[in-house]
Amino acid sequence: MIDKKVKMNNFNGRKVELREGEDINRALRKFKNKVEDSGIMDELRKREFFEKPTTERKRRHGAAVNRYKKKLEKERLPTKLY
Image 1 (spheres, rainbow, N blue to C red):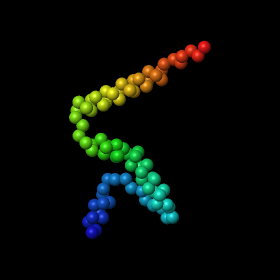
Image 2: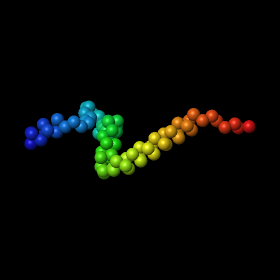
Image 3: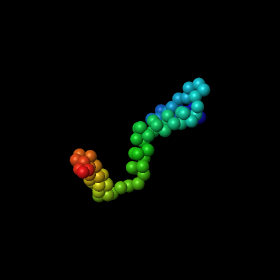
Image 4: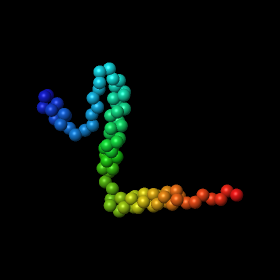
């Protein structure tokens, strides 16, 4: 039983320590923010299924095209309204 506790303390995860009288919902919210900021869930979703290299290239290329279109739209001069 003690060994299990020691192993859990060495786990490289996120943790939130509760202060005296602190609400559990507040601590849960802090934990969720830490996990989201660290990018753990994004990495997990990415590794959940195997993605073929060609599919990954197509996805990245599509994202680059969308970024470029967004950049052009941002730099475009406004149309004349007269």
